[in-house]
Amino acid sequence: MDTKYIFLTGGVVSSVGKGVTAAAIGRLLKERGFEVSIQKLDPYINVDPGTMSPYQHGEVYVLDDGAETDLDLGHYERFVDISLNRVCNVTTGQVYAEVISKERRGDYLGGTIQVIPHITNEIKRRIRMVPKTTGAEIVLVEVGGTVGDIEGLPFLEALRQMRGDVGHENSLYIHLTWVPRIGATGELKTKPTQHSVRELRSIGISPDMIIARSDYPMDQELCDKIALFCDVEPRAVVPMVTAELLYEIPLLIEKTQVGDILLKRLGLAPRKKPNWRAWEKLVMEMHREKPKAKIALVGKYVELHDAYMSVREATRHAALSLGIEDEIMWIHSSDLEKGRGVELLQEADGIIVPGGFGERGIEGKIRAARYARENNIPYLGLCLGMQVMVIEFTRHILETDEVNSTEFDPATPHPVIDLMPDQRDLTDMGGTMRLGLYPCQLKAGSRAAEAYKSDSVNERHRHRFEFKNSYRDVLQEAGMQFSGLSPDERLVEIAEMENHPFMLGTQFHPEFLSRPTRPHPLFVGFVKAVKKNVSR
Image (cartoon, rainbow, N blue to C red; front, side):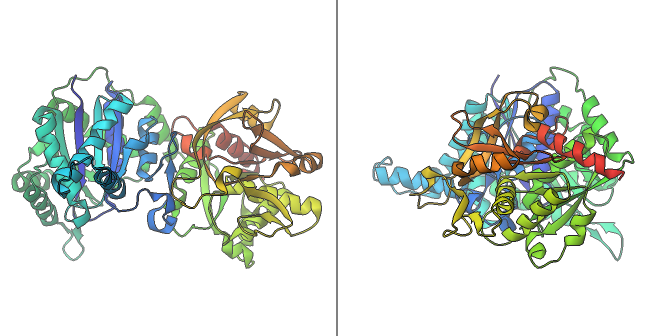
């Protein structure tokens, strides 16, 4: 069959949930037997979010092939349970860099380079690469930002052209808008949606479906009004009230028959009946009253919880699978340096120290690792979290605070964490770390091997610094086990403490491979240890 394309745009305001909606629709189509992939078009000029501050962009989500991408790709992978690749995240920076590179090589034979057709052709080329590289039969394409944003115009023009390229029967446009409520009158207002659709139609795109987001229920009369003024079939106006739980959204959209409406419009018939039993069980478990486990997340960017989106979700997946509710206590590592937040550590049933870059707040993370070691509190360190665990233990063994990482103290006499050799001569920061999926050999009998129930795994990485091997012997003799190594045994991938309920750190990011109905083994192992503290 011809590849089918579903394009999602947003209107009225940003952050109305396009990414989660795209992910949920992808799951609906997968449940009906189709191979699905999802692509995010980001209009910002950065090449990727890899060099952007988490305060600006939230989490940087890493794919198997090492692409540093938007956090929405995490939603796509978790909801649809697929692995995406680098063509699934496109930015203005990537598009213009490619076009300018071609111009410099003379590929355009001296022609004048313009937004139309050169930029739009490059955008369309990247859209068409998705089915070629993923084998997808249906491709969902989400455009970041809001209709009316000047930086998004080339992407919308490219989407307009796609209908002419692939045919009306192979393309479909969904517009996601916000329906505000006027507090004084209690009325829901459709006028912003009407204006947003008018703006979209002025570009040449007429939506086939409108998903109307609101914090309040919408009656059929309001949906009919949107359909009338926006020239959309009444049944293609889908009201979506803000969900209490993130993972309810696919089930809520399923009830609106969106999946069947989309397939009929694309000339497709379902290949199988959707089976939501596992998903319904997940949501039911989320609603059930459960014992609460207090888990301290000690980070540098905790003011913006989206900076740790995958860590939060992976913890939730594991907790749900074990019949408990995770209560995240957000602790700023800089506060711990100043003696604030220690009382939260004392309340914690478990401690997670996630990744990060730069010197700020590092001593606070080291303090959290020390507290976990000395008080037998379950600890999970992710990337930098593993490194501070090693720094803290080496300081304890060598009885000196001069132990450090050369990232934070280039002159440290005890560089237990050091820059990877192949990173030393790099000048560009973007896309140059150790990125993507790499194999790891597990030590038999270790806590890591017990969790994975395997002797080897593949995990996603994002780092420049590594454990310095000259310290292996002294730490092993003192009770630290290096239970995961690269196949050539050159790189330490997992370190864990012996004679501790659970104190384990990974150089990789296991949170990126956790799924709602298939939680990551290391998070499950950590939460199992945490659960033992819940009733203490």
